[in-house]
Image (tube, rainbow over all chains, first blue to last red):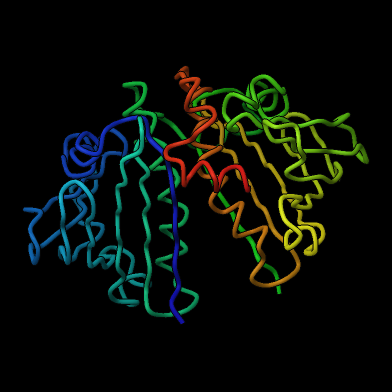
Length: 153
Length: 162
């Protein structure tokens, strides 16, 4: 039984601008907590996410790419042994143009139940995609998303 | 077995502004495709979600309310006999203040049965409604035409059913 995370967000932008925001590593860093995706963005090309400190967080390859509509990435975590042991997941990003917004659907799935990787990305994607929406709509990233400490009032 | 939809979004706003936006009818109409809610907003108060034609899309009551942190309502879909027959689902909003002037909103909509028509409908509607809400709270405009029609006629239909 597969395990799957799906997130849909509507962003007031164009498919072309959203496509560039997803693929440009310098833009990635603004909403992905300093991390960035690196790839030549062709079918079969290697793909990786590099953290702000230079470590590789995830790696894989481009399975499908159709500008500015759809990217499918073969995705394995590289820096947490428990997640790496789960092997390959698949992440699909789909863009659908509306009247003046774009529907972005991110589907991240793996062919096993109770996946720790899917649990981890289920926490990460809403932060990343909320920040992406804010940045594209207002020009400003969201910034700090840590909980306010109780003793800080 | 439970059917459940969960949506998490991070918004640049305060818990108080988000709390008001979730309840205030004029603000709600602007991001919820013309829909608004009627309630006394106390534990046990009746609650209704009205479509822009004034007909109820959902009805129920307030189960928990703790300003500006948590709001839980019993929610029965009224848009079709199939939804009505499923009885009450539960919708919970949880709001947490974050560093950096941001807020985390979690919407958990669940029902105590598998393959629910209500959960299917709201799974399409919530991402549209909450995307609009985030845009408005962060200072963006929802064009008047778009307040009614969502992104496309098909998607608007899903929003109204939700």
